[in-house]
Image 1 (cartoon, rainbow, N blue to C red):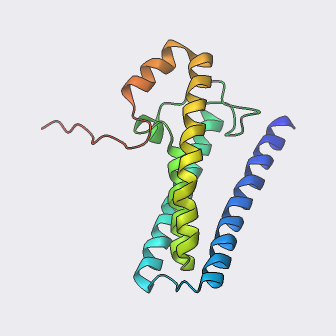
Image 2 (tube, helix red, strand yellow; image 1 turned 180 degrees about the horizontal axis):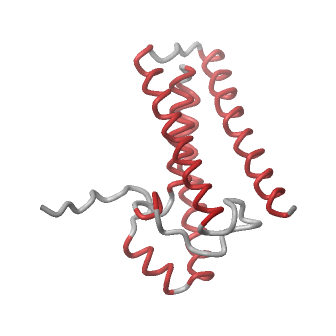
Length: 162
């Protein structure tokens, strides 16, 4: 029951984000008379939205299967997840949300919603820095090695062997 509640809380938060940000952005756009994005940006937005949602689904599945937990801080994974997208960046959930929300903003044509998503990067970064301290306290040397090997945000190019 506790796991269901943790997942439900996260989905409620995500629903608020995915409804609230576009609503706020479209409201500001109407108020300021900002025109919608042109059609090509909307198609790019759809691609980003789908990629972001797919990334979230992948991360959540890994949290449940490998981490034996949820993205909710009240019931975090009990094992450090370092595979899949976590092998490329330490924050694939945040990056997937950013892609999905920015994509949704483009798809809906809202310049202001896209700006809101970009501005939210600041508190998200602060939260991720705080979370790293928590992960280091929970997983110790394992997390420190992971942190040294995997970048926080921007994945490094893969080493291709010839």
